[in-house]
Length: 81
Image (cartoon, rainbow, N blue to C red):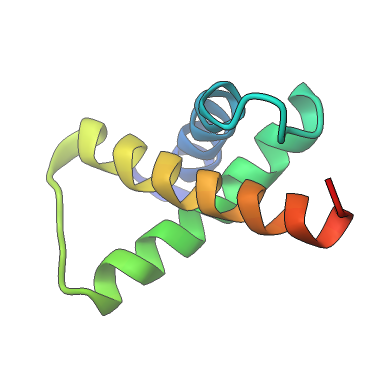
């Protein structure tokens, strides 16, 4: 998916999936989706830093899920769960 809207949609999907993966460390569906959008950016930055690239929509979602799970994990540490 191209553009900002596509990135937001991928981030929402990633936030939902990361919330399921990080069971018990989520913040509710809405916040997980918002953190998923942020996680998509974090995942893209991290994978770019490590020189890892995936192709297509599956790669974008995979990258965003990994980034969103990382963001959820860090947020749960900050929250003190």
